[in-house]
Image 1 (cartoon, rainbow, N blue to C red):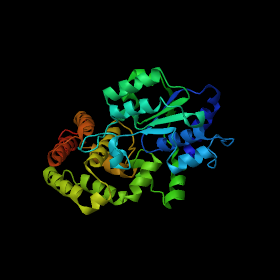
Image 2 (cartoon, helix red, strand yellow):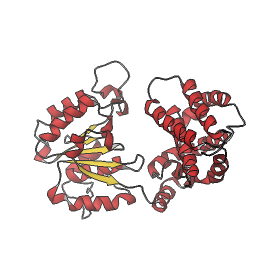
Image 3 (cartoon, rainbow, N blue to C red):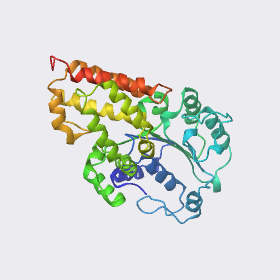
Image 4 (cartoon, one colour):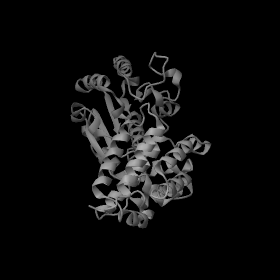
Length: 348
């Protein structure tokens, strides 16, 4: 299966089957279904009788093995922490599973690829997300890409392709995934979830799968509280709001909704992006229904200080998954924002 907004990329990929690359890179923003596409391509390669459009038949021996989760020629490299069964982790460490794809996984893969494929057919390796490889892992994979085993196709999936080694990118045929059309995304959301929340779709940057996940975890309620709270900056002490937000992140509602510090920082960054866009004469992208609020807020905001605030939030997002004091991080974030929106001189 592939999503409707990927059909054009799929058709072009199928048209290259006669000169198939040994490694492809699926690149695009997160939340639009690149992993689904990668699995569909793997299914195509492992299928004995693909349909006219290239999709796997679903009934041949290869498809049955794949659907059972036991196909010997399909390998997946994902971060240890994302593996379905922690007991199957390739790491011998008793510590918490790594958020990275570690070098031992590539070493094990190299050994597995020395064995002839099932029924001498194609072998497929999906690496997702490819940017989760650390430096040692990436260099180990590079050696495989430089001298690829016969009848083996590597499928790398990445939401941040620039973080990959240039030498890895150069050995892959890159396929870029554009932002899905809003109407197509809303239509899909209506069909699959029974509701299409345009405000949540905007918040995810137009990514339908991310929107569906957000809607399923009560994202609308989380978004409403965020907008209400951030709108009180100027009337409420930022330090008090930081305390409220710290308690909010620990609440049963936030935990059930998977609303954590990382997501809070991301939303704060997107809110600030919209305000910066307004200050520069543009329109809100992530919170378009709050445009009137951005217009009012921009009247008292200092453009340079707001841009500095945005850049600081970018840096905060890069370290938010590291061990940090959540309260101090939230305080820093809100104090920077409060200074930017309450400058006496207004725009500069």
